[in-house]
Image 1 (cartoon, rainbow, N blue to C red):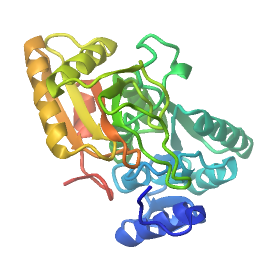
Image 2: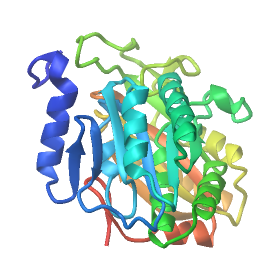
Image 3: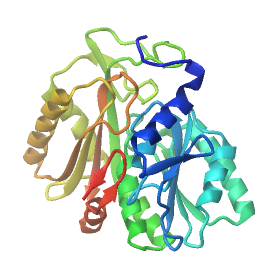
Image 4: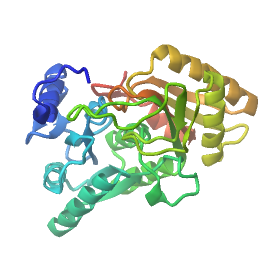
Length: 331
């Protein structure tokens, strides 16, 4: 492992210290592992809170700021934060307008969230929870509890955050977020492993001439390794499954996100995007919005997550609304 770090035991506090230094005036760090907006949202507007492990930068704290998240509770590398930190953030966010609590479907995150919500219920904290589970590697019809939350949380923050900024009620923000949640799908592909920065150990193994479609962001198994395919063939195979998962048909509009895992170049992602556009055009499906870059990474893993969501006028309006965060700004 070659990484510019100090004591591995201090990875998370040191990276968070550097993160807030880089974005002074926009975010601040409170209680060691809670990132929040430097300028709080008015109390009469719904707050957005999320949680997740470090090591996936810029996710998740890179999306704290006006128009997106209010609080991000950070765990250690690839690990969920403990329930005490989560309930602490929910207490900080407490307001009459309520809280939208966004949780990615990973065992540790869900366990911490459930315990924090039990405490929140006893304390009268008003919230509604959204569980993202858009990974279709186990099958688009697999039970929600078997499908992981991947990069889809990011555009969900964007849409729900814009709705909250616009003054929608908690019920309205939650309904919008759930509508988007039920119309999105993600599929990942990996070519090369990452190392865990605390231990230096590889998190999975693939031969030099192999890739694996469906691999999770912590090295969880996908559909099994196969020989490396061309960009166009990879785009076609993944997009076919994703469009079927969201039931996109000719005349529909979609949001497409290509999320680099950490070591895949923009050159490669742009070539894949070209292949995606050709495939969508052939199917008569409109590319209504697109993002290419690194939003939720896995250290130096080579590969990417392909995300598709079926969009309508309302979802597009909130998706395209202004926001200002360290990792995503819409003027």
